[in-house]
Amino acid sequence: MSTSLFLYPLPPLEKPPEMRAVIEPLRQAGFLGKSLDENRYAVGEGFFNCMTFAGCSPHLRLDPPVEGDWRFCHVQIHASERPRLRMTPHRGRPRCPVCRAGLADWKKYLDEWKQDASQKLGCVSCGANIAVAELDWRQYGMAARCSVEIHQVYPGEALPQDGLLQLLGKLTGRDWAYAWAESRS
Image (cartoon, one colour):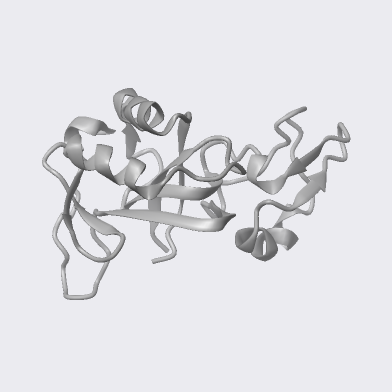
């Protein structure tokens, strides 16, 4: 399993911003480099100006090791009709965003939630009727219809700088958040 850092617009249930409104500012900031595939990009010259890395010398593989192997640091843009849940196994534990209580028996619904996080559930502690996409995963999970995935970045290893999230927010008219989660590719 590999993990990634995800950037995504809030609120997660609203129609996502147009992909061009996400891709162009990231290109202009130098965050995105050359196109590698339909929705994948090499990191650009300004990538390290947009991220803060923990430790004194992070080791990131920036070039693909073998043709067709995606296990290197690159950026992928995702868009879907429904919000898709992604989380970091063994770390993410959802809480109600209203009362902050942990949810019981949540693991048995994960496969279903990963396909459509717009489903509603009731909090047994406070009675709030909330969508799965609105659960609080404490930055170890997220649900979104649009996301920017930074591959091969592990939990706690890197954070987006405020300027990157502000740039995305300004140009899409939405607040943006980040979380670490399992990568599916």
